[in-house]
Image (tube, rainbow, N blue to C red):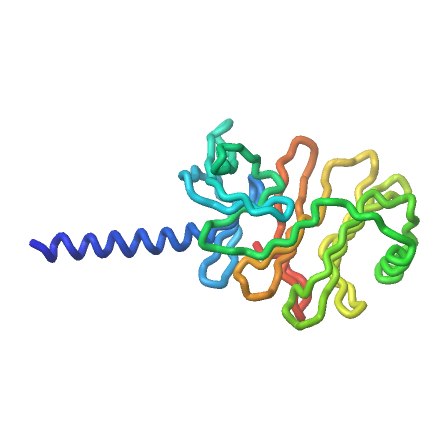
Length: 239
């Protein structure tokens, strides 16, 4: 009789531990992108499902806010949001959250930087362009060793206007070598789709950072987060 009780109980405990472990490694990027870690493998999914109340860490503007993840059904889709321990509600747009057992290194760059003449000259040489200072709409840059080779790379985002169009470039500079992530342009008459550099994140704590790019596909569309991995083989999107 005892065995009949103990064995199912042990199985139940093991299942709970496994589920808890996987859930604790879940990373949410905005409303539309969900990532979880299976071992060291990063898996991205856009599945729309109800999320039970669970503890999370919320990363915003360099601060870590402890709280809970919740979901609410709106128009047959689930909207995710975070609630802090002090009961403040946060939209998950432009938020990065993770399970409590995962301490993830996140570098966000949600502020546009001022660009000087020497930096612009360097970018023009790297991209073989002739961008003028007064045409720049946005410029962001992160300097970090993202591929764990003991030398820092630069991840640069620049958008500028030229010939009635807006141009966007997001790229990695490694020893003066350029690896493009986004090379995009859109005319003023057809505005809608846009890209921006959110930051970098070491999902599986292996000292190799993933590059997070936000994407909006048109007016009134949600923000999606595309994730790119950079190494000696170049850049590839994690899908």
